[in-house]
Image (cartoon, rainbow, N blue to C red; front, side, top):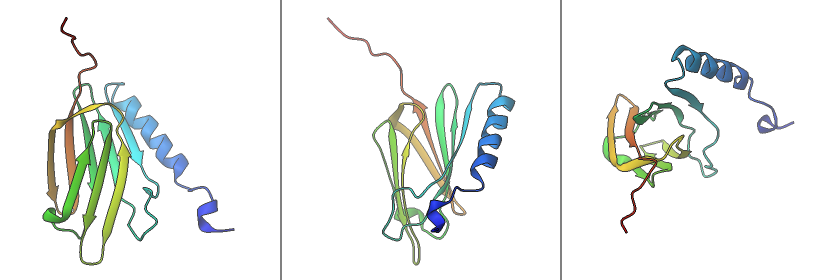
Amino acid sequence: MRDDDRDDPFDDLFSEIERMMNEMMGGNAEFHFEGGTGGHTDGGRDVHMDIHESDDEVRIVADIPGVDKEDIDLQCDGTTLNLRAAGNNREYRERVSLPATVDEHSASATYNNGVLEVVFDRADDTTSIDI
């Protein structure tokens, strides 16, 4: 049996932590643990990523140690965040479906000590139509 054919023993633990965090936040925020291969089969590393959702914003916190700030590329279309970063011996690639539609033009990002934080305002659910 190959390693990738087995269930991750931490899936149940993370699911329980998510449930407890959401319960603790009183339903005002969504707390997600994101994992998986991120679709990279060409040597990219997994990115540990947490996504926090509130009524006003979506916050993504990603651990990407070993890269310079200038080597991080972020792209967002409002529903998906694409992250690419490369350092001396590391390469990260991640595509994340966001839990809510965001205003990609509102993005702010910081990178400090290997931790990337990206914050988006949630997009308005309605659009007015002029007649």
